[in-house]
Amino acid sequence: MRARTIVWACCGLIMATAMQVNAQTSAAAVDPRAQPEAASAWVEQQRWVGQAPAIATANPLATQAGWQMLRQGGCAIDAAIAAQWVLGLVEPQSSGIGGGAFLVYADGKKVQTFDGRETAPSQATEDLFLRADGSPMDFRQAVVGGRAVGVPGVVKMLSLAHEARGCLPWADLIEPARALALRGFEVSPRLHGLLSKSTHALLLDPVARGYFFDANGQPWPVGHRLKNPAYADTLERIAKQGPAGFYTGPVAQAMVDKVRQHATNPGLLSLSDLASYTALERAPICFTHKAHDRPWRVCGMGPPSSGTLAVGQILGTLQARAQRAGWSSEHERWGAAWLHAYLEAARLAFADRALYLADPDFVQPPAGDWHALLAPKYLASRAALIDLAPDTKSLAPAAAGRPEWQSSEWQPWAPMPDQPEYGTSHLSVVDGNGHLVSMTSSIETAFGAQQMVRGFLLNNQLTDFSFVHSGADGQAIANRVQAGKRPRSSMAPVVVLDAETGEPLAALGSPGGGFIIHYVSKTLWGLANWQLEPQAAVALPNFGTMGGATLLERGRVSPDIESDMVRRGPAVRSVDLTSGIQVLIRRGSQWQGSADPRREGAVQGAAP
Image 1 (cartoon, one colour):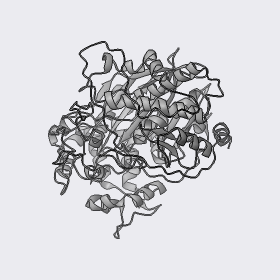
Image 2 (tube, rainbow, N blue to C red; image 1 turned 135 degrees about the horizontal axis):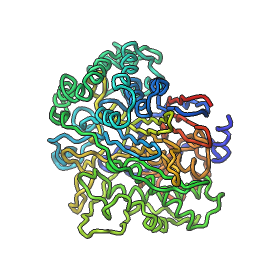
Image 3 (cartoon, rainbow, N blue to C red; image 1 turned 180 degrees about the horizontal axis):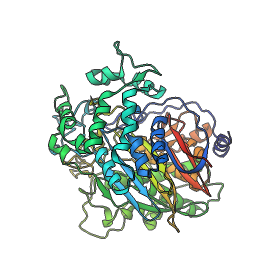
Image 4 (cartoon, rainbow, N blue to C red; image 1 turned 60 degrees about the vertical axis):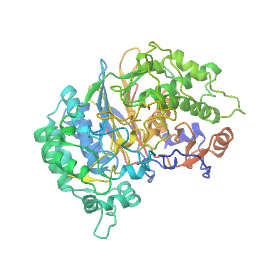
């Protein structure tokens, strides 16, 4: 109860009546109130304090699988891999082997980031999501079927990370999930609830219908034991053959057939696309954040993810504006003034994101280095645009900034229009040596492309590309569809290091589509600046913007704060913002952990 008291005391949270204000949406977008996954019951989490090793995931069964590897002497990478195979089984709506992932690893000497993002098929063109008249397709029309299925990347990425930093045999990491698929697991309240709200398209796929629903087309009830022998068979192939068991042979052929033979919305995936997919190790993106008692070094995935860059921009701009204003510690606490400053910083960051961010193998960073967007001088100039006067209106819509160019040859892009972004799951691990893994994985929308094959669901990640390829003036959009390209992502798995010693301090991340950036930002700020315990930081109300309307978590923001946001504009909406934050952080000689109460996660670790 102590952690809950901290949250309510520091934030002044009270139940509020939802406020409904209309807002515009782009042609390809859905209602901005729609979130990646529907809300489910708030599940109270026990405060966890102990010693390494430890793991936090979005499902207790996945946590148990990872913990089993850690108890057997496995490394952080081993635990993450074992947990991910289980997440694909018990939380199929969020992630799985039919999708992709980003993984961040830190051992105190080096930070490594592994890119398992999906790629566009070799036959894809920039017109993939355009109708015959040149207008963008409806989002749901694009999602269901084969059109939006990208080449899955998670299996090869996990293999690459295991080769680099794994300890236990590859097949051993697969066995917990394979055995669970055969003996079955109980349908959880969250899985049942999401099936109840997402049945139409799944029911149209015979394989998904036969697995998720009874003979009458009703979702299996909570507690029903669900077995998946097809998934077990796929995992056995991967255990024996490595990634080749997935990217070639019967499993690969089944994916290609499913995608290309869809009756109404076929896609372009080919056997050669699967066989040639390559997971990558990329240089991390890092930034320094001044925490309450020491400087933190926050590191995560760079492009094609926009997550770490956007988080760093928001926190850096917010901290620069607070310093410029000479805010006291009281002003820097949760409240209307702080939230206004945060949202303005976010609008500035999302404007840069819309213009610059895309697959780095296809676009050049401004100033020749993505860190130019995090330069203190640049963020200070952005912070100067934020007006903190009580009667000020929001600067929305914000314009992208212009970092100091190092080359006149850089080609500007057209900003990408707003589009919905979905999906994902997150896990955090610390092993007995204090090494960290932070991994976010995804199939995009809830249940992906709504197509099931060989025991798993296919992704619809190609809808993370811009549906239109150019702006009104004909200027190309950086994140347009191109063959072999990885779509821009918002996933933001991060690790925190002591900026002076390099000691690993924390691992965290969240699902939540574009709002991942906000969930990670608010948690980092709460941990660093307000010194909250993990469960208190995670339980802070969710909020954010993609550049336009302000979204506030329904029932968790006081009417006074909400009214202040309405007065400042633009449109404000109270909605369910279902994050899934998993945090592990070192405090003194102990580790603390939290799984987001908005989902069904669990933390497990060594006793104090």
